[in-house]
Image 1 (cartoon, helix red, strand yellow):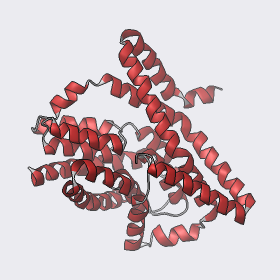
Image 2 (cartoon, one colour):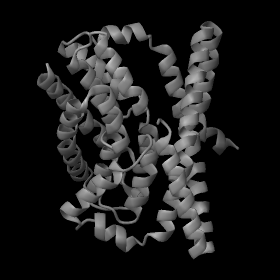
Image 3 (cartoon, chains in turn yellow, purple):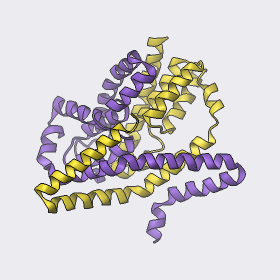
Image 4 (cartoon, chains in turn cyan, orange):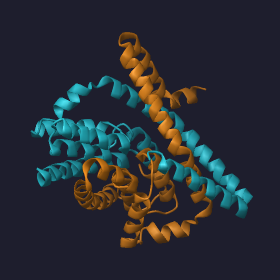
Length: 161
Length: 174
């Protein structure tokens, strides 16, 4: 189940290439060249970010995080949101993790703030975002997203508690 | 060569930190490298097909088509198309950056590119399915209902703040 979307993506890319090659070999070559170049350009930053994520996950003790999620005060929500903003987790890790926090007694508001900031704010991917879109775009997109993520997280907490 | 090293500074920094961490706390150092390895494999499972699709988009989809559908005068239609296209996406947000970048270069309005990225990051269908499974349908629907307007607001506010409706992405900082 976890890899269904990867398979679909590869099939789409494969089918697209075949169709493209059938219609115009030259253009297909151009597309592949462009794909390779974009990949090459982004690989260094991507590897750096992946290295940082590994470090982050190794350095932050899980017990501390679980403890933080029980705290429903504004300060607690703020800390959880900071963690969410910095962290980058794929959905198939993030949602099981969130549900395990809930089962361990965390508040819905705290878990929701974690989820919304996790999904909406990307501090660790900011260097990559800056490479594509520039500093101002990246700053404002993440700043406004953080603001709205906090509102949404607190609202979800209100609705379900 | 110097240029190459500069490009990899973040990676070199992380690798150096890994070694130091491993020296003092062997198990944590191993966790760090193992986690990075898992993310690397995940990246390889998403990035190559997405970059091939970007390449095909670049050579086959004319600028006019992008402009008409998500350009500066696309209005509500542009917003809807941006949301639907990104909702159907799969993969981490960093795979969405080059897609949005290519769209901007082909004439996509900034607000729509931000909406596209916001949707990709928060409410794409594969993600919602995981959410239903682990958090329940109610939770997913409430978050979706609150997030959708937030994404659209973010799109227009970012566009307003950087003061450009449409531009080659490399010029966004000027």
